[in-house]
Image (cartoon, rainbow, N blue to C red; front, top):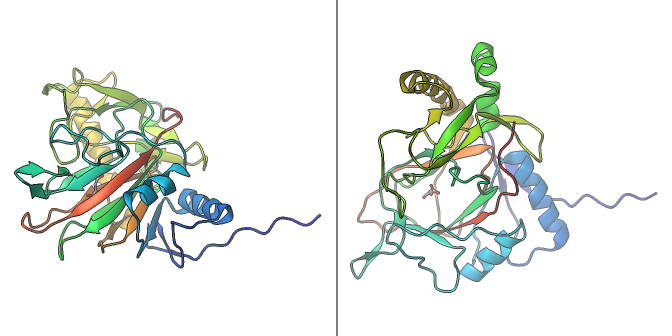
Length: 289
Ligand code: SIN
């Protein structure tokens, strides 16, 4: 029997992980092309598409092909800012008429997985560049399969089966989320416990699942012991050998698997403009061992 042809995709691997997909217009993607992108996203964890001329509606429509979208969290200014598009979160330092048009400012955004304080965090995020500074504001990604594989065997054995609290107090820019009263005790803070070591539901591979360092706590441990163990794990998890950095150009779209990567952003000159629009695809199940 003739097998259906495998849809092909021009995907060039990035180092040490991720891939750049070329010769593609995300506005006019046939089903076979989307199937190939989905496969590449699972295989490479992060995909870069350059020179995309997307409107907000195009961005939402491409994002929806992966599944239902989360409504964006309320921005730091207390609003959702793209009229009629609650799925779009604006990441920006721009102030217009005295009001921030987006979130995260111009400072560093620390290593994190998006919205892992939820019981079923988004499975994917994508960020589309509308305006970028000449220097700074680069985004780095970390491979959490490799982070697990590279752990010293004794440490790996020690943490399998443990759960870590993913804090819901602060966003990655260090701003307090809407409606939350901060506390210094991670055990009291809002958030969700997830296994430290999870199995990816689509690839079947094991990965470290850390969320973010600030206000994390390992269930059942006293705080000093939890802090010491988390420091030991984090020192291994974000080594340069398992991360890559993307320098943005207008029209770049980066799609990442939010289950098996973390990301962070460099600070940039606050007088420069950076405007990015982000969507997130709903998670279908809590992260599981
Ligand atoms: C984010 O942390 O989700 C935003 C990353 C960025 O601004 O590059």
